[in-house]
Amino acid sequence: MAGMMAMMAGGATAFKPSEANAQESKPPIGPPVKFGVIGCGYHGRDILSTLAVLPNAPVVAICDHYGAFLRRAGRTATEAKRYENYKELLADENVEAVVIATPSHQHKDIVIDALKAGKHVYCEAPLASSIAEAREIALAARKYPRLNFQAGLQFRSDPQRDFLVDFVRTGSWGRSIFSRSQWHKKTNWKRAAPTNEREREINWRLRGESSSGVIGEIGIHQLDANSWFLGSRPKAITGFGSTVLWDDGRDVPDTVQINMEYEGGVNSSMDITLCNSFDSDYEMYYGSDAALMVRGSQAWMFKEADAPMLGWEVYAKKDTFFKEVGIYLVANATKLTTVTGSGDDAAKDNEFNDTPLYYALEAFIHNTYVHQSGVEDFIESFGEADDEILAEYLTELKESKKPAAGYQEGFEANVIAIKAHEATLANKRIEIEDSLFDLG
Image 1: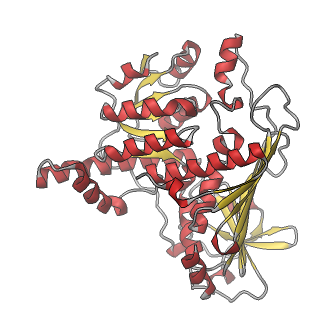
Image 2: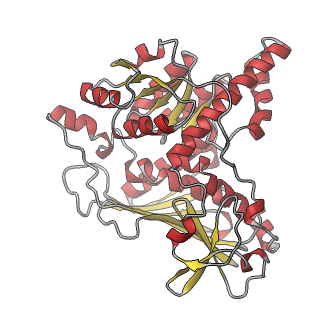
Image 3: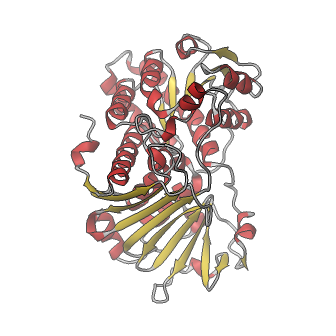
């Protein structure tokens, strides 16, 4: 963080959005990756729908122990074999990669078994509902470098946010001051079920024994984006949590606020509520020369009056927000005609309007082929070698891959989310030692 702030303190650097190192949409490379999806609940079916519109992503197998979910998922994946036991799916030689979309506290065994079975793994975030199990998952992924492992931190694969991280690194917002984010949606977070037993099972997110709460299950994406943008991990987290509306016996709060402390006096706040929908979800980053707002696939920079001129912003598209003028930032921007209008107007010129889940799965498909090809090339050139040497060789493929979260990023985000959840449950400040992030 100190290095990043020193860079920003040195002044703004000339920058054009069209020169950003963003990922362009390209035709898929290589043969199809045959998928198995484990967990066909609400999010699992969303994953199936997304895979259905992605090229090179045939779903050949689906799994859920609950028959109603399995049948419903089969309406989307009509050609897929159906399994009630995930181990039977893993034994299917036709399955090359799996997406794990079961409840978080069930991830560990499935991930480890999938890696042992030789499957590439996309594991939804959070990796686990405890730091110990998240560490086991990360260590297992590291143990099998021949397989592509991706954590489901979707913002890491979003072309717009990837572009914005490069933008931030130029120092165009000056020195980092603070940041804040929010997620507001009025919903009781509770699913209906035909029996009491099934209701308890399906509402695992409401129980402290199996869930890291709203901050861990929902907020983890914004928590990770915040540390990614700031280039550092929090040193301490203060949290406040309470159940103010949905008092139905749940163990986790329906409303939380946290404050994260970073080096150099930079703080970041976040609030999440299931009790009110106003203003939805977005992130704000504040610097001494400008503020940056990120809403979905769109972003704007709001310059300070005394900020140095960068040149390109004179011609950039602009939107008005009450009395403020936001300079529209978009990955791969090529049209620099000045306009004043609504965010909807600007969005028409943004080529990246798909969901973060779409880009995350697209990256997984692309990277799985690149990764597997790299393994095959290495073996052909050097023969069988130990996995440590192979892992070093595969790091050179990074430039050929699309942005995505690996096991390290998934583990670190999980640690932060779980410590934030602990802080909100106890309504206190918790320090986070650097050693907590070590995998050994």
